[in-house]
Each structure stands twice: as structure tokens, then as C-alpha cells.
Amino acid sequence: MSSTFDTVANIIAETCDIPREKIQPESHAIDDLGIDSLDFLDIAFAIDKAFGIKLPLEQWTQEVNDGKATTEQYFVLKNLCARIDGLVAAKGA
Amino acid sequence: MRIEYFQLIDRIVDLDLGGRTIRVDAQVPQESTIFEGHFPGHPLMPGVLLIEAMAQTSGWLVLAATKFERMAFLAAVKEAKLRSFVIPGQLLSINAKVLHEGSGFAMTKASVTVNGKLTCESELTLRIMPFPDPRLRATMEEMAERIGFPMKALTDG
Image (tube, rainbow over all chains, first blue to last red; front, side):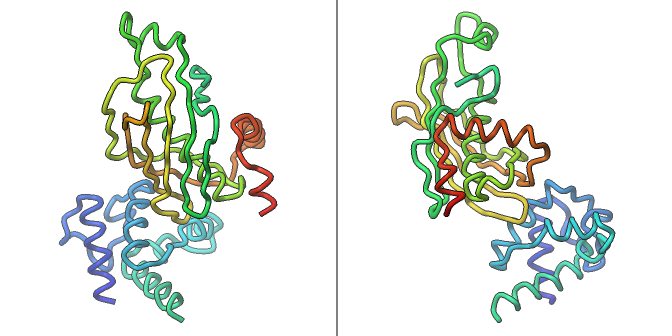
């Protein structure tokens, strides 16, 4: 978990020019860090590459739009990292 | 090329779906009202239209990869370089390659050559989504037929 978070935090810091110390596990990528959907594509690109996965952004967006999920479930960084770990585990299964 | 209508691609020359690459031809017209203003006495194909041509080339590749189920929209332009002037009458050969296929987006690298010489290049981000309007899809299907998009091979495959 910690190494996933460090990787994701470093990606966000580099991609969006956000001070690394401002990026915490409890940070909400949109509400706290001000990352918009276009910037998040660059982050998703880097995460996909770093972990060898494909973040299901469309599915997540649809679930949020349909009221079946909250943005916190996907975009609070500790939750995002848990989902990345899940996708990595599923890939190796 | 119907430059005033933003229909910049004339013909798909090569489409390698496995390798996620495409090559198209685009003939810059000899005359256009665009050249009257850009620039008087020194007509040039606008750089933004060269970038648009690379985006459209990338878009056709994405349309092929999604079996014409989804439309691509330009979202970001990175590292664009316009290395030399493009003048009326020149034939552009445009290449694009998918660098990454994400969920709802793709990153491509595209370039334009004229007479074998690299003229411009860029990395592009495209948003990919269902066609937002049936009229857009119908127009794209008409254009696909005109430029030799291998619709039947893709939808049958």
C-alpha cells in the first residue's frame, strides 16, 4: 500500500506540478488537489504504465454519474491506491 | 482536402490495426480563402490545421480500433513542433501511432512528412466516447467511405 501510494503521489506531483508534501493518502484528487478530468488522463496514463493495468475510468465515471458510487470511493488517494492494488492482483491471478 | 470544412484527410493509405498505426494522404489545395489571410503574399497551411490533420489521422485510427463504435475528440496537444512551412498544393503524408489506450482516452504520436521530409509532429490526447449524436456518426460514415476506411473488414472481423 505504501509503495503504491508513493508511486501514485510522485506521479501526481510530477504530472500536475503539485508539491509532493501536499499529497496525502486522505487527499481527494479533485476536491483537495484541484486535479481536473484532463489532467487526470495524464495521471491515468502514467498509472496504467507504472502498474501495467488499465484504470477503468469510464466505468467509475458512469457509476458516479448514476449515483451508484461517490467520487470519494475512487478519487481519495488511499481508495484509489487500494483499487490499483486490486487491479494489479487481479492481473496476476 | 476540404480545408474550410475541416475535412483534411483524403485517403487512408495504410492501416495496421495490430500495430495500431495508420498512414493517410492529405492534399493541400492550391487555393482557399484561408490562404488569403494566412498570409497575404505568403500563403501557408496554418499550423493549427496541421495539428488538426494529425488529430484527425489519430481519430481515424481510434475509430478503427473501436470498430467505429466510438468517436474521438482532441483533448490535448503536447510537444508540437512545426519544423517547416507547408504551402498550397503540397501533398501531406500523415502517420499516427497509438502510444497508449486507456479507459475513455488514447495517447498518440503523429507526424507529417512532405516529400519524405519530416514537417511537423506532436503527441496528442484524444477522449473516446460514444457518438454523441447520430448525425455525427452518419457524417463520419460518409467520410469513411470517401477516404477508403475499411469499414466492412473491421465490422466483419
